[in-house]
Length: 260
Image (cartoon, rainbow, N blue to C red; front, side, top):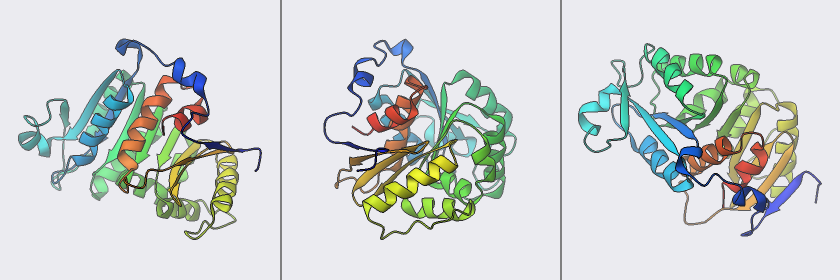
């Protein structure tokens, strides 16, 4: 086994991280969750519940105000920002989002954002202006995987993505070796090792052959994925964002530990 590959079983690879987690709610960090459009707020709602379960101290959820009439009584934790005619975030949300991000220790783009060009332009602008910990998944990741140039330049980015999204990311960054869906686990680990050495600002969490893979700066861990959770990205991303902001200097260890 390569010296950069760590295998996590049901016993944590980094037990010291478990015992050193903040004990009081006030010291467990603050997470801003962003997502939703007029037809759906399932992803940010799931992210909020998963972050609470993972032990976040405080979480705020920002949704487009096209959802306010429907959601405000169902989801009291939600806050609302300007929406465009398509029901997604308007460009004018950028200032509000940047302001809310200053409160947080980390930001999670949880998805269900829709495919409106104004929303994706706003998110791209946010990613370029915000330098803190940013975790991206679901359809937010679709845009950044297809247009990754700005993403690789910013620090502190974690992508929780499918193999197909990772393939698109590799294509966008013109990697020398293609990632394929029929790769064995050894080849996938080797690919992620090379990819994150070449792009050290990007942390990757993905799922392949019933294994979760975490890759940070050339180090790769594998953890068995539960077979009864085929829909996994939002809950995994919320746990990853929570653990990471609680141990910001150890992204590989925290992202790996978040999977147990």
